[in-house]
Structures are given as C-alpha cells and as structure tokens.
Image (tube, rainbow, N blue to C red):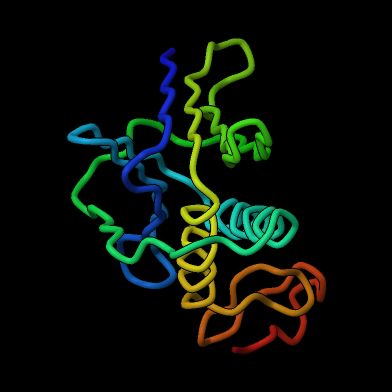
Amino acid sequence: MSEHDVDLPDEFTVGAVGPIGERVFLLQSRRGADVLTLKVEKQQVAVLASYLARIVREVGRPGHLPDDVAFRADEEPAWVIGTIGVSYDEATSRVVVVAEELVAEDEASSVARFSITLEQAAAFAITATGLVEAGRPPCPLCGLPLDPSGHNCPRTNGHRPPSA
C-alpha cells in the first residue's frame, strides 16, 4: 500500500496506448521529475471527464487552459485504478481527484490524491472526451463497444448482432 498526494501537479492528463479496440488507458500526473501513471478503464475515463466538466460548469469559467501537457506513453502504470472520487475544495479553489487501487477485498489498497486547478480539470475533460470518442462506438442497446463486424449483443440474445 502506498499513498500519493500530488498537490498542484505540473501536468494532469490521460492517454491511451495501443490500437483502437485494444487500447490501454492511463491517467498520468507529473510534478517536477516525479511522474505517476495509473491504469484506468475507458468507462472510468468517460465518467471522470463528465464529473470534471460538470464541476467546471458549476464553479465558473476557467482561465487559460494548459496547452503543453505531454502524455508519456512509455511510463509503466504503478497500479490499476478501482474507484475514483471527485470533489471541489472551495477553500483552495481546487478540484480533488482521489483514485484508489483495485485490489481484493481483504487487501490494503494504494491511494492517489490529485489537487488540480480548474484549468487542469477542464483540459483533462476535453482530452479525455476526445480519447473516448475516438474509439469504437457503443452499441445502442447494451453499451458495449461495437466492432466493425458487429457484436453479439446480450440484449438480443445473440440474434441479429448490431453492426457499426
């Protein structure tokens, strides 16, 4: 078990490695020379982007968004994210993202807390939404990704698989 408190990272971003349909999504922060990379599911990226966008809308228009965020695809993930929590700290005007490691029920998990600016939250939401939308479209019936050849949709009991 380890705890990472990343207060005002220089960079807070998301990226994906691998071909569409086989991509691995990675959440990444950098503060100085310290880089923390965590593996995350595509659906978690989509939900996190949605939450961050909602906070940005509710709090108010951010200032200039960071445009020099570099995702380092060669970084190995420290661990796999199980749960993600998001809140807004009014006292510091920071968005707090808490990621907890995916572990068996009886094991201690690692935790990472990221305290980011509203601008970093907005930039993350934009980047994450673009990454998610660049992948395979979801099945309109079950939400699972569609392959170009279609898929066996559980909602149709294997009959007439939807196609992309």
